[in-house]
Length: 113
Image 1 (cartoon, rainbow, N blue to C red):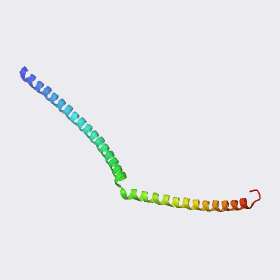
Image 2: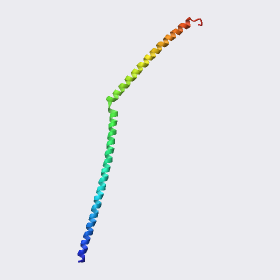
Image 3: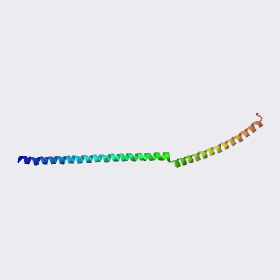
Image 4: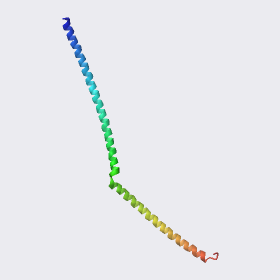
């Protein structure tokens, strides 16, 4: 009879042990799953940042229409500036030429020659 009592008690202990192991294993699975989710979020974030970087690089290197348009606009600005400088230089040359002609006339017609 003592053996029969000991057996249920050991079964009870064994069941409690199984129950504790089950709870520990479920908790471990939950912890692992939580870490997997955190890692997946980090990887998804990193992947998204890499995608954004790749898209920016693609647009910078391969957006030829906008790059060509910017180059054309800058060329037009520089050509307009060049034409303005050329006009000013020609006007300055003409003024200097007139002044030099007047100075030469005065020099050759003066008595201090």
